[in-house]
Structure formats: C-alpha cells, structure tokens
Image (tube, rainbow, N blue to C red):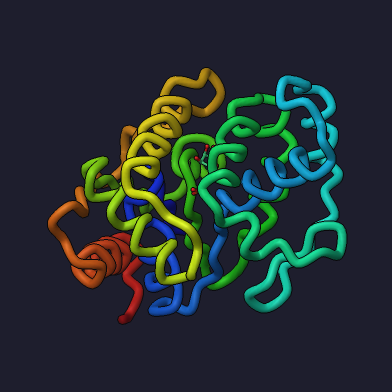
Length: 218
Ligand code: C5P
C-alpha cells in the first residue's frame, strides 16, 4: 500500500498512475468519488446545505467504472466530473462527515493484491492509517494553478489562469480547515515538494521509498 496525499494540482493523479503502472498495482482515485457525489447533488438539484440528504445519496450512488469511463446512473460523466466547478462541488460535499463516512468502506474495498496506490487528501491519515509508505506531495499554489491550466487546455476544456488560482486557493483553504479529515500530512508521511521536480523525479523518489520499505524488485 502506498498513499499519496496533497493539495489539488500537486501532481498526485499523474504520479499515482505512473507509480501504480511501474509496480503493477491498482489505483484508487478517491477524489473521483467526491466529485461523483458533488456532481450527483448538482444534477438532482439538491441543496448543497442539506447534509443528511447528500450523505444518503453518497451511500447509494449508482456508479460503474468501465475502462477509462465513469458512469453515474448509467450516464457517462467522465469529463463532467473533471471540470473546476465539479472540483469545487466535490470539496463542498467532502467537508461533510456523513459523506466521508459513507465513502469509507467503498475506498477500503479497493485494497487488492499485489498492492494499491491510493490518491487523495486523507489516505494516509484516515482511510489507510496503517500504510507503510505515505507520501505528502505539495507544490507552490502558482505552480499548481499553471499545471491545472495546462491539463484543462490539453483536454480541450475551458481554462482561465486567474480564476484557477483563486479556485485552488479557495479549495485548499476549505480542505485544510474542515473538521472532518482535513488535508494534512500524516506524521509518518514523506513530504515531497514537486515545485521544481519533474514527474519522473517524483515517481522515482516514491519508487525508491517503496523499494526500501517493501523490498519490491523494480
Ligand atoms: O483530487 P481531486 O481534485 O479530484 O479532489 C476533489 C476534491 O475532493 C478535493 O478538493 C477534496 O475536497 C475532496 N477530496 C477529499 N478527500 C479525498 C479526495 C478528495 O476530501 N481523499
């Protein structure tokens, strides 16, 4: 088990995919689950203040992960859950303890041999506290906004750097200050600042940590 936590745009998604591919391990993209809940709330016009209804919804979501696609109630939402608005809605529902509790078992069910790389905000602190390799990946807010901008443009999605910077700051502040599983490095996490590191450098650092702890042949 490797947990990779950190703020939005720190590179967690890409790094998680590459580390998992190198090891032949499964991936848990926990942010996608919060994004799905936020999206479902939006689509069903549920009030974002109605924690009880949103928690019930989170516990009963009809989701299918199919190849690289995500279906919610049978509808392909793969791109819809990747927008900045969806990220912001995700962070609103993620502040609700009822929602976090509803997603806990779902996330733990991802554990599979030979291993799992779990990407999120509280993988090392709350969901998989016994993991022996915990990474906390950061980067400066400016660098994270630029990366998000490039990512969105590559996908052909609308992007505005100034708006992205303030969205990232707003989302970080909410994720760090919430009472339920705030975004914080686990005490035993290895912190990596990726501001001036390439993706390969970050991946190699994590792989050598995994090799050191689990004696995995690479
Ligand atoms: O990682 P991603 O940007 O997809 O996550 C979207 C939002 O979901 C985050 O801003 C955060 O509020 C929430 N989240 C969370 N805990 C996780 C993963 C994501 O609270 N483990």
